[in-house]
Length: 198
Picture 1: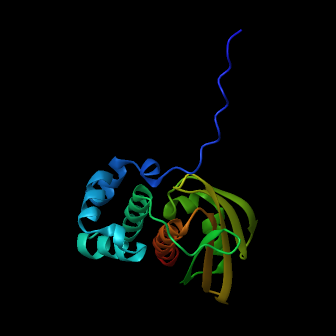
Picture 2: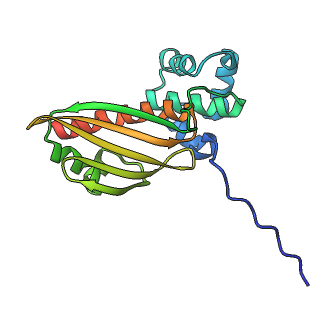
């Protein structure tokens, strides 16, 4: 009789260094993970807050907003730093809003229609759960932290050609993910605004 291998436990969320490859990071920032860790260690980043680290990367090293958050989160995970700000129920969420000079129907269609969505949100893993035309969309989102988070898109009609858009991103793993996805959605919604207002 042969021994059976023990069943492995389901994998937990992957560290950001596993989710974002060294090559991708180098392409986006000019340096890989090890290089950035050395730069931040030399700056004593373990003694700094998440906001200070991301700001330092943007202002001192010219790293774009989303990548600054990515490097900061990867560094914090690698060095075992913890963030505060978790909700009472243990959940983490980010929210971002944007006013767009377009009708509510066009704005919500840009989330619901995969072809339009790819033009401003090229990331894979956005799966629409519910779609109420000109009103709302909910979706599952395979995030860079290895989990599946939830997206809730709500609209407020300002007038026939102007819409206030709010994106709520819930079920995130921690405060660092919140900061990362706040920056991520700011950048993506800026792209959506440019697309719909052209």
